[in-house]
Structure formats: C-alpha cells, structure tokens
Image (cartoon, rainbow, N blue to C red; front, side):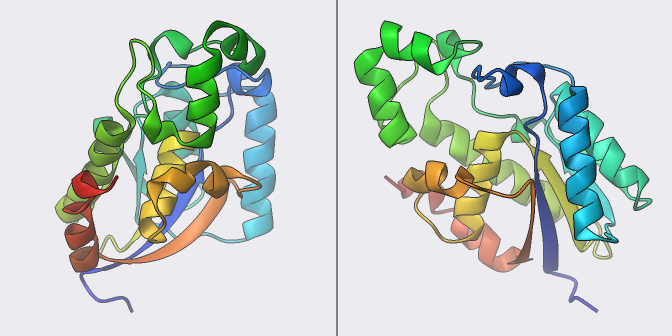
Amino acid sequence: MAKARDFTLLLIRSCATEWDDCGRLVGSSDLPLCESGRGRLEQALDAMGPIDLDLVFSSPDESSVQIAELVAGSTNARVRVVESLADIHLGLWEGLQADQLAERYPTAFRQWQADPGSVQVPGGESFHGARERIVDGLVRAMEKSRARNTRIGVVVRPMAWAVLRCWLGSMPSSQVWEALRDAPLLAWHEADLGQLLSAAGSTDSES
C-alpha cells in the first residue's frame, strides 16, 4: 500500500471538443465534450483496463468535467473541480486556426510554436504565470486530500496536461510541444508530495 504522502496520478488529457477536432485553439474557452472525443476516451479507457482511483481532480471547463465524471463513474471515485487547473488563457487567439494565426500574427505565432514561454499572447495569460498557477493548484489540491486518497485522476486541457507532464517528468517547460507530440490520452505518474512541494516552489524561477 502506498505511504500517506505518496501518490499515483493518472493524467487525463481533455481534447474532446468540436474546436479541437477542427483545429481551433481552445485555450480557456468553455466547450462541451463532442461525440468523437467521447469515443476516443472510451477506447483509451478500455485499452488501459480496470482503473482504481480514489478521487478525480478536474479543470473547471465543461468537457473536462464531463470526462472526469465519466472516469469517476467507472471507479466509484469522487470528482473535485479545481479552478486553478484551467488551461492557459489564449486571449485573442482562442477560436482561431493555425493558418489564421500564421497570417495575422506571423512572428509571434512562429515563436509560440517554438517555445510558448517566449510569447505574450495578445489579451492572454503569461505562459509562466499559468504554469505556476496550474502546478500550485495541483499541489494544493493534493495537500487537501485525505491520506487515503492516494490514487488520483487529473483531467485537464492539453496545454495544462503538457505543463504537468513536463513538471512531473522533470522536463523544462519549453518542451511542452514535445510532451504533447504523439501523447496518450492517459498517462500514469508516481509522485511524492514532499518532492512536489519542493519542485512547485522552484517553478517561478524557471526560465
């Protein structure tokens, strides 16, 4: 049995809206789960086999909450919405497709594709500020969970998912696109809360 301060996290990537399917940037937009997305998630869950979770944390957007409830329903886990796990707010870019962004913001979009931390999206949230919010939000939510809640699902939108995967894997956050490339919808991570608290304190100094 896991120690009281050890956790097993199942990171679940919520990329299951109509905007995702047609290549639009979603960011923090609040959109429902689409049928094709539900089908892909159900296939991924079936392929993973039985999942035992105590608790599921969810980003506040509609599609993530729907996925969290779907996952929790198969494991008898409880769902807890964590506001600070919301994906990065992309301001004026939300809802646009890649070709539109390349035409309207050629230099900034090219830099963002290389390293999102190097660009301040017009009207959007700082990448580094968002990373700190997301990481701190997960750590605080884990701290508040009871000792027996050691197997936790975490449902977040793609960029937040990549931020957390980089952080849990000790990868620089500039590698978020690498973390997303050919990434599974679900991924297990072992985590020690003490180490996570220490790592979370260093996120604001990361360049």
